[in-house]
Length: 292
Image 1: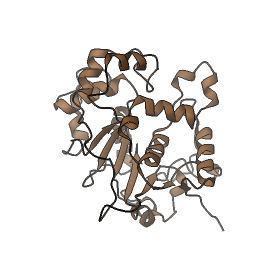
Image 2: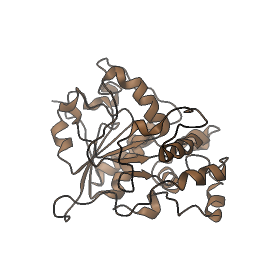
Image 3: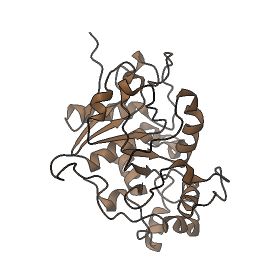
């Protein structure tokens, strides 16, 4: 279940000693090169969680089932929408388009993971694919992945209701991207230690041995899946890369058979092997096509 000390960053946790420790790690795994005053000023506004992020439905007892939905083309024509929406909670991330694709991916969003960049760029890019705005389901939880200094500039503006004052998102108003209810029950910021733990323990890419190691990091989908594993009792993954990924288009919302393009920032092969191993160990259930 959800462990606040591992996954959540809040206003009480950044002492000078903690700052000095995290300053030894590059982003998004620490605060190397950041301005102490600006980061702490942003964190001071983040609501401190008062309860577990997810709780059992109904009478509050029993298992919590979660679907984590990626955007891989394996979901195109899958007909898995009803099954996905049947879970207690549905995790989505990035360009989580549902309109027009409900039969394959469902339309329910309980937890939405994002960075400032993925939030702004996805909304701009995916409008042509039918994404008018991000999900604002009743009770939705927003989880931010602090991928860079710009995310703390974003947070500062978000919780003061102002425009971003500097950086790549200058003059944007973050409050326009969320539901109005941004309190301790609806907004979470992942701790850099959690991200570093995922990379080092589960997703240690061979790319970390090369000169570009500093930019290698888990995908937002990978972070979402492991967050679900830390907060849910049953986790089913849909739309994640599988060994037969070459059979499918890059995403479920593009009609053409555009193939996946691998960049060194994200190691999809390492992630694919991790999902396979977790599935074989019955820790998750990974959706895979069973072609006749």
